[in-house]
Length: 562
Image (cartoon, rainbow, N blue to C red):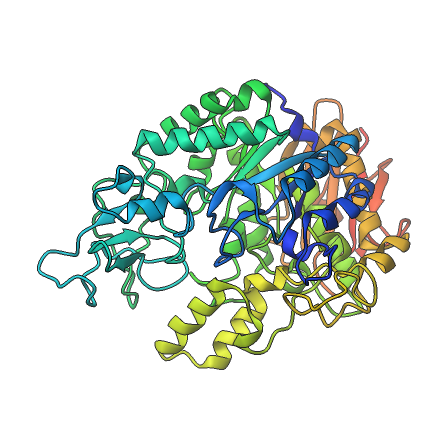
């Protein structure tokens, strides 16, 4: 791994293809729609586009159930379209990162179809197991272990054709691959090499730390009131994780080619992240953590609670400290699996939506790490506002709704939780114009009700809009070494409305100060570095205000002197 990889100064823009732009009027976003709107990404200043899955898929989990790793799903276009997209992005100085989903495949992938025959050479490509001893196969309680699916219910599905169960930590249509089998690993590495040969610049690796599981597969510890186990030591961060990551790196030439890699780290902490992203080893470039997006719910997204700002600040600061000397942070508050941050941690009222979107962007982008922007975040998009389970397309939402209501949770309580935290909040189509602009047909998910007020055309045209502020933040990262590599120190860790921290090198120092509330806040000047002679580099509201008072959702970046 190079000492200062190129992605330390890069900003990533995530595209969820089915919701980005539809070029043919079928209601689904496609590759030609992305090509047509690449200048929007280039104008922002982003360096990398990460594409959520575009492979052939039955779409049980919106493409994260892959039936053919080597072909583009016709709903998105053709391989010729993909090659044109890569070339068009590279012409604009933008790298292309593909989603790599290799903990599991679709149950319609030829590998799995073949594995259903107990005599097949591919039987061991997946985790097939007999029923629990003393139980009739296919009956309640006969599952081989008590492992649960992250989408609800058991993590095992009975296959009557072969008389055994297969493991699926997600949907039953997403059987887990058995990475213990070297043929599986080589098939994955060969596929990755083929995409790199087509010009792909790296991979975002879906739930990558689940690929090594603790063998033998045995019951885990159950939480009170839950019939299933999600014990970290059983399903994640298994004993061969480092071996698999280093083998992948060498087999694909990841470090040698300086390919971009970010691994999704579900059920993992700072120590795991440091180990997987060590700068002295050839493993991953960075990981996605889930800890900071778990501070506002009690163990489940169906149990949301109001954000206590010190919890969020201190969690991110702990990751900053944990990876300061070794490893590298990814910086995100939104993606295809998370609700809109303005509705979640900001204020999505007409009065404060724009300023709170800017404040959230400022504090995130001024941390050390590689920032990720999810489509629509750069214009301050809000949650979808769905009110019935029928409006949701997400398999996770339907599984959670079924499990919760079956256990006696009132349906309205589940709907309220999904409205706040459900994944479809981030998946509504991109509003390019006040009229919509996403498709000439019927969109696969309803447009946000706010499209007339919150859309790309209006925000980009506004010099004080959210898009303009993101451009300024990206420019700071590109031009200021202190933003890229400066040391991080959290100030006022227990303050319930102010977010303050410094970024410093031996030659430079920045103070980031933000009011994360919808009311004026005084600034405790005696507890902060002196602003005497300081230069105001950026403000989310307006420059020249009283240094001792912050307007609602005002964020400032100062260069300190002396």
